[in-house]
Image 1 (tube, helix red, strand yellow):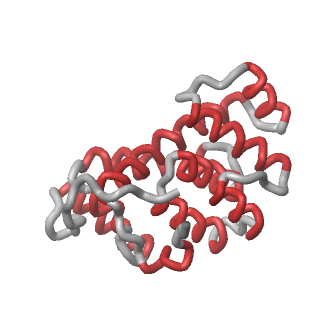
Image 2 (cartoon, one colour; image 1 turned 90 degrees about the horizontal axis):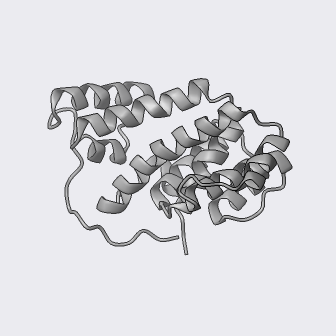
Length: 190
């Protein structure tokens, strides 16, 4: 999973160079995270892209009904399926440091392999299926997801996560976003 060379060469915007709406979001990120992810600086070229991404991301975290390890399973499954090395690295760090996802599960999610936990496997499989079929899972796919103990409303939460990650994955693809120092240890290598 390697990012292709960038189609667009730009420097990420900063709070000083971005439009006011995006500048506020970048300042908030700096306060919350201690740094502004490079990806946010690129999304700031379209303030509504950055704002929509941040609102959707926060909404997924708050209301999806998924536990932290399940949230990272979804985000990593989408990013791996979309071939986004930046987001795979970032969510690998979050999975390990914040969501306490076991190392073997992170490794499996990074390479699209099977997970040791059946519930997380069902979630990753369903998420990958949703990405690969452009939201057209079979009845059997939906039944397997629900049989793993998930609720119908969580299908819509997966759709939200796919939308959010598509924003970030495509942003990173178009500019080949450089990894932030916080994510370098999780870099995807061939």
